Length: 93
Image (cartoon, rainbow, N blue to C red; front, side):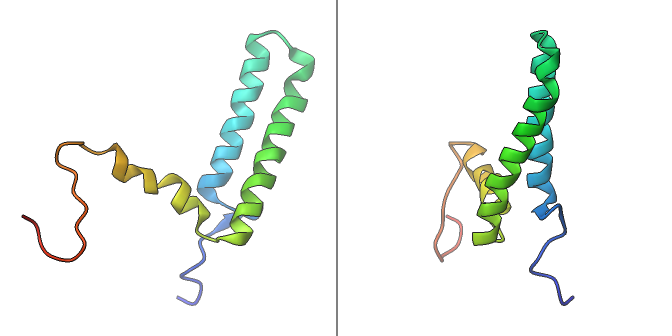
């Protein structure tokens, strides 16, 4: 359990952020195919992947838990708006 604070990475990014990069590249490639811009498919997909990889890699070098704050912190705000409570100490009412 020596590396418990660091999660597994591929190409220097945590897996969820790498999947975001791959998804953006795939959406760019599919949109080029749909709009019939076939010669631009590979440059657009590659550019999106490399651009997002650089963006996320810089953020992860500053904060190694950037993926968790980006992806999982918004789950609280998606909940039921009527029954959502933030409690600091104390118990449930």
